[in-house]
Image (cartoon, rainbow, N blue to C red; front, side):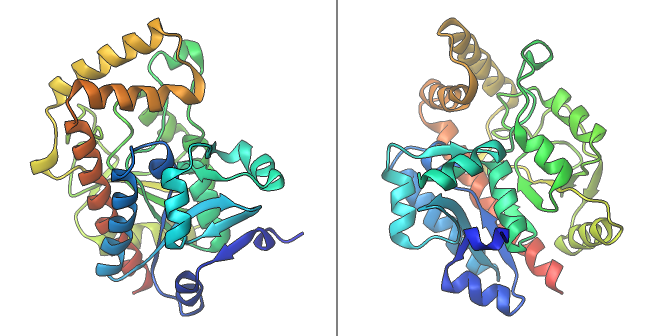
Length: 304
């Protein structure tokens, strides 16, 4: 069977694909599992509008009724924001969630798969997954990284989630040939903060230069994605040392409470929000908006 038989499209996305317009993919895990209601639905709608305002078409991806939906209508967005039984979907979960008809929110890896199946080359998210701290013993490595190694989608993000081991994540990406581009930065951002102490592979300051690099990579047949590391705007950034101390406290609590697997990231994000009295959520929303704007500009440049 043709994989495209599992895809459905909104009219807006269908028109964009038919007329070769720039499109930016968006995930649903950030809506269902990354933010509380009502901030999640407000964020989801505003992100889509930012992409439109910058000349591209948004395609929020999620799984419902046995289909991978490329673009969601308002009622569907609301369902992802409010339904307490949304499954978190990575590459391994697609067959089960689709065949069972469950509602599934796509992670970075799953959104990349959906985007690639639909022919979308650019994806905006908050931060990607990576190698977890103490990953050398737990072997807890996000499927986002293996997806980046094999799926031709550029991911615009504010780095990896700072609850992770940034150094080991960058080493993994290098091993698998995934370019890490600093967009208007020479330092790899750490999600809540603009700095991490780690560099990027290349710095590019213009969307057209990013597009040219991506086009060259894929025309050479060098499969896989790329990271476009886009730091949170300075006015919304948190202090790197301060947020690191908060993260360490949250990690210690997770260990004490035996939080494992898929539950780790939601637990840590919720606890960090509590410990920073909501400032981390404000920073998270700001960086998502900024990534949407940059992704739209890269998508437009890819069509020029």
